[in-house]
Image (tube, rainbow over all chains, first blue to last red; front, side, top):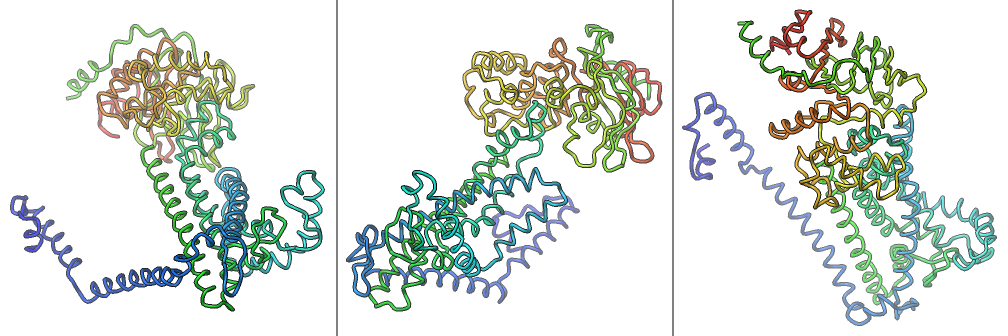
Length: 336
Length: 279
């Protein structure tokens, strides 16, 4: 208690009525116990320092090892085509483009399906089935990514080959967009996007369901009281109110998609071509690193590390944005 | 002691001789009861809501005032397991079983909530006309006119005229609540239901809302739930007193003009409540 008084400069305890004085003493005692520096206190500080050191060291080594590549070939890494193992040049454009293509298409699919799922779970499905559907979606998050990869490779790829490719190419213009690889490849950028969409769906639904569910009930009742239909309530009140949080969920899902490795490595085809025809094979940064580094020379390792840095920056940026947006949503709802 | 109290309360009941007589009926309640999953929350409510008058629903917590109010524009439809028994008539038409869609009912019977709840993503202007938009009105001249007249009726126009496109969340609590009243008025409803509309507001804002309610009487019928005895005495013409019965279900104890409820009630429990002996 004496410590606390000294900290604050002045001790007001004596000015309080007796009952409150006793209370203040109890509080002060509690504070002195909880803030005293026991061995446990130091253990916690050491643990957090170790953690910080590991993060710094980790980022540092990756940057250090990729430094030769950045120093000499940064332009090739960001904009070059072709990956000439073992001595280079190592062009990263195909992987960067492939990452963006697969992630964005997956995101578009997941957002459309995910918002529908979230709205259904919160508003449309009868209460007793709600938890079942929500659990089923969350179960998707528990499936290991290698299992998704196998499923995509063994089940979806043949199906793409026999059904989806011919069907897509039966449409005029579709060939211009998707390309027509014939019976050559089952694995493709489109398949990778579809598998990724299934994988990021639970992430998106988990957050979007929450931001939709916390839209205040009295806003919904207010719009109903003005003669709005249920559909109008959802479209003109619930979704706009949850909008910022939904963007947050979108960016978080995007960050998951860009970083996904094994499944994409299995189903994207693993070809380092800048490819805009989605039925042709391609690759992503993460998948490329995973499949190449086993038999790499030291220069190639440096280039792969440099790709890793690019991916890290993309993901870090996306996480920052998504976190900022979800926080902003909290504030918006807090002032309502 | 009772005489002193009586004298005090009597003074507070404002002279309502200007209010129109109870000749035209806006809504009729006949033996209305609301239950949730078979458990009755409020029952035995039979009274008429007179047109162009303010009817207050008073009673302690748990007496079913808000539950009853929400039955009047079918907001219980949302709640699983909710059931409304008896008859509620709007202009002689049963609102639950008659030839009246729920959206049409709600455009004719508006609602103002306890907490000011303008739509946070909409501007002041968009809030004011949100009901018209929901009902498919698209013509800008009609919307502009409705926005101005409803904001004027809610005594808000002068302070927001220059910032109609600003987000409604920039307004003070009292202004937000008046915007919610404007939003309801824009639909040109016959009845406005108010669920403790001033309980989240400071005294000055409360007073302005009360003045507003009194001036709105010429246009609409107002039904207000309030915890505040003085407020009921000041602004309402008629008054329904509800009380929780022995089985924890609310029931109507007495309905009459506010003056009689406060000065000369039939049931002793009414007197006890208005004198502040319980609740």
